[in-house]
Length: 415
Image 1: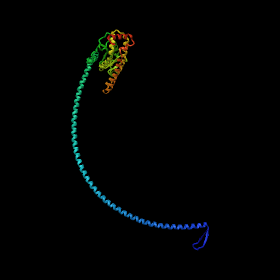
Image 2: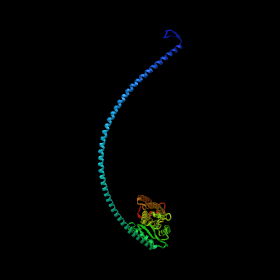
Image 3: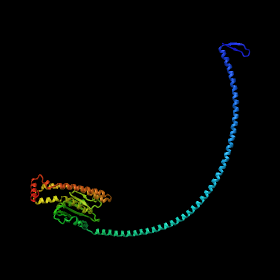
């Protein structure tokens, strides 16, 4: 319970907790609202006064700022006008200088144009002179070529007339004479002991054109049967190289020649026969087909290869003169020759490749050199094999031959 004194009459009265709380709440709410209202009114009045004061202050500052900016603008305008005047003065000066430079350049340009016209005129005149000279030279060359062409045409016509006038025999003989002349040019220097003559022996009903034989100490170590074939351009029936292989092989065997060579101008467009030295031993043994330009080269190649067996041929002749049974000896010698021939064919193939490279282009000389070196290696191998072969080795295991061989050595005083 709470006692409350009335502020008006001073009377006391008691109230419970709930009533006390209600009265307290009423008093507090009214007082609070009154105080709040008073304070709000006061705050509004203060804020209004402050706003007016701030407004006045801001307006004053704004006016001052405006005055300051106006002053700056005035100063800036004055400076700008001074800069503009200065720039205009400088620009006018630059314009005047540019006009002067332009006038100078125009004067130089006019002078250059004038000099250019003069130079062009002189160049044109010079070119006209050169053109006239070249035209005169061309005309002169044309006339010279025309004269040369007429001369060549006359020569060709003369050759054609000459070929037409040649008989078939004369055409063939012209190639034979060419080969004979080429051989005789180097006979004494390269083949001083050689025999090279026409084959005039027709006992068997057939004969070749030329026979080549070479000797060492009167012992023959190489022999070649040659057949030369040529034909006129006007010949209607064209022959082939293969048409003469059988006869050439027959002549080789009948005349006891080791090799057979066809020197041919036939089948001029056949690349097989234009490649150089052509080995046709797959059809006929030890037979070759060549163009005339390889005539001396082939003889030299075969001669150089055969020289490796010359000593063995000499030994064979000595054995034959002593009436020794040389059947097995000849067989083994033939085996040695066949082995040598194998190496020679390898060398010939290399040589053929070298000739091909020579015919194609000078730029391939290195390849030719390699092929020739390979050929030399094969010949060296053949020589090594031939050097390893001796009469003593050949008669080994043959008592009769061995006894005869020892007897010959004893007669000669050899150990």
